Image (cartoon, rainbow, N blue to C red; front, side, top):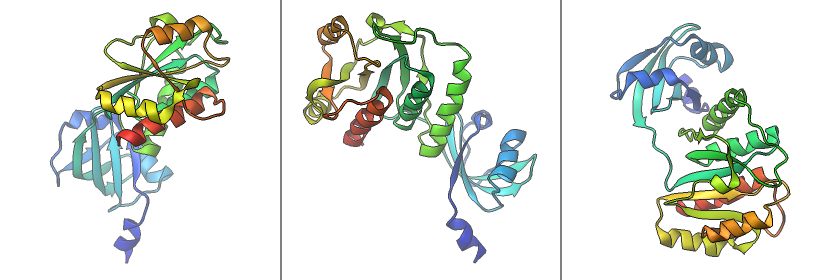
Length: 251
């Protein structure tokens, strides 16, 4: 009866960079978790017990295992499966304008959930924010980890340096710009599918939209201007809707 009850429990996913040092672990092998903060989270925060299943992920590997020993400072995991983490395909780069901090964090969260490989923050002509403090990276890392744990999408995006709009990298990649004046999203998606591109660069506009010269630049780059809805979306919402459509089509 107890094992049936435990099998119905939610299977948590936890960020555990310590497992990257384990390498590939064969099924049935046991590994000691001696990361004190992780053990405390398993034992006292999540209140997991022996024989419960848990997923751990680092930057290289994702492990599914059964907890054999659960203590506040030491846990033992019996490995059931070990996988190399690989980015979702096609690989998506997101050009994300510098918007206000809470909205930027929400956008990064959605980008993580939807499997974006790289985020390039950029400054547009109408950007209200022009600085990206190095200290923000720690907070954004926590945002990405939380999003990965919730979604079980374990490939965390990298965040590049801030660039001017004109310096957004778009070579060897299909460009899709989410734009209220663009064409029907379904027709654009069909074109993307037929192109069989391995890399796609998605661009979202800033608060206040792109300036006319920026829009002309997108067209000169060959960007597919794509309308997501008949209404105007905030940047972070456009990312959720637009990249969600891409992933749904390609899943």
